[in-house]
Image (cartoon, rainbow over all chains, first blue to last red; front, side, top):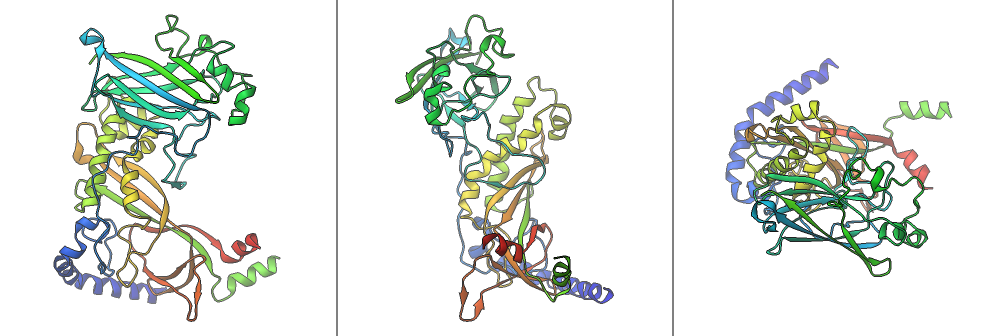
Amino acid sequence: MEQSRKKFLKHFLIGATSVPLILEACKKDDITTSGDTGSGTETGSGSGSCSVSPTETAGPFPTKTPSSLVRSDIRADRTGVAITINITIANTNNSCAVLAGAIVDIWHCDKDGYYSEYGGSGMQTVNYTAVHFLRGRQTTDANGLVSFTSIFPGWYSGRATHIHVHIYNASGASLLVTQISFPEGSSSAVATVNGSGGTAYGYTKGVTGYTYNAADNVFSDDTAGVESATVTGSLATGYTLAHTIKVAA
Amino acid sequence: MPYIASYHIFSVMVKKIIRLCYRKVIDASSSKKWDKYVFESTYTEFLMQAQLYNRDKKYSGFGELIQNVPGAEKLHFLVSAAIVGYLRQLDGVVPDILNNLGKHFLKFTDYRFEIINSDVKNKSSHQVAINFFSEPLTWHDTIENYLLLSPVNEEKTNDGVLTELLSLQPFLSIYSIKPEQNDNAIKS
């Protein structure tokens, strides 16, 4: 034990004296192993130890990339009945004229009622390629419209079917956090998708235990239906949701 | 069975399958281009997403939000969306970690992003970490301060299995371990 400690200290001292050499090497290598590679061991990278400097061809070269939320097709690896979500943003500070350039985030659960998020606690690993399913961000066009391709949301205990929306102005300041509700009734999309026809698409929960809008703690006070979207379509052709949200921008 | 187990413990070297974790810390002092992009994009995303949990703008620090607002710990996950594009640019190779030949070699597909500190009013306090979890590796032996490793399922050459020599270093740890025997037993 003592011997290995001595050995360690010896290595450490050798490491300390060779630091200037390593720094010098980094300097000379600046062109081939510069910060542009995003992968060299330079100062402040967190792996500062006495080990070899990178000696390989430069690359890959990082480029500025928007958040992975910025996309109109938000399905990732989720399957279900197709739905196109069209949201128009209007500005109450401008006679409810449509608002261009607003940033719109949406997120909703999958057909089984699950949201994308880190499962459990602690340090469980996550595969980065599919972890942010059913979340997306778009900027409204000249008509105040954003459009997302997704799957019809499922439901979970205690809540009616819904879509979360967070609207920001062009510089990212929050304007409104709200939710969109779905129409109900025997021929509604919610009833059809969660009925026997939806089983083939993986919606197997049925509506036993479903919380309807009138009993939903978010939508129950929306008697005027301000949060309720228009939903048209069918299982075979997919559904289209249209909704206008008013913000003070 | 207990006899066999103890025999393995005292044998020369039972091969183990390990996954390494490299915790890459990025803050205002990070100098590499990739790191700076991650710093900028995660701070921007933090400013946007934090508003969900800070509607009346009562708090400014990430620690305050975590302590006072239920659900605010989801910010780790929500802000992580900002780095997915940058992770893709790494082509599945863990940054910074080199073998003793000076080359990057560690493969990953799993990660976990965490916000260490941040503040909506103070960008310089923004500090994040990306934990890179390596693909499974066979740990053949330990030579001084080095682990002798090879990717699981590495094909044998005429010279045997090709290996990598990796120095133990700060922010690098063994995330998980299991005996190679068990792994084979499950397969067969």
